[in-house]
Amino acid sequence: MNLFDVNWVAVVVAAASGFMVGGIWYGPIMGKKWMGAVGITEDELQQGHMGKIYGGAFAFSLLASWALAHTFARYGTDFSFAVKVLTAFGIAIGFIVPAIATNYLFSQRSKTLFFIDASYWLLFYLAMGAVHAMLA
Image (cartoon, rainbow, N blue to C red; front, side, top):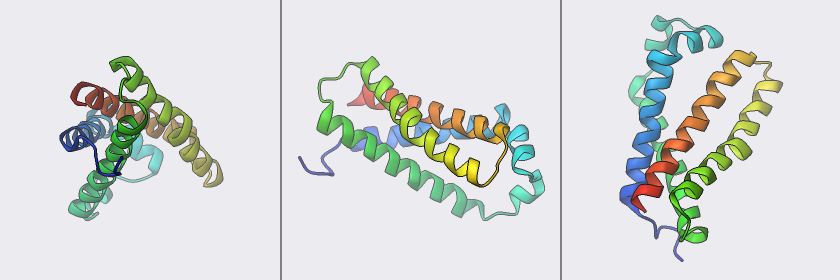
């Protein structure tokens, strides 16, 4: 199997779904709490180069979505919907959350920030897993 032999529609739609989860999570749901935990104001946040930030974030979402699609195409061709969603969740809880937890321990970030960000990544991968399960 070729590395790029994946359902590209699913890759893009799943990346977009994860990206939208981020917009909702870091917007109306946890935006103010996240800014407080990071220690920045809304004005400081807006001073960033938003095209670069959002473009880069979406590019990384595409990369994560492609890796998930490749995993399913290579190893899980006959997985059920539930198994694909749980596999995506397992990737988040087993790889992503411990990685950010380790970084946050060494950088002495707050537990609040950890739980906000870790929860986002769990939701991100659940959304992507659901899209891949529906479209692949």
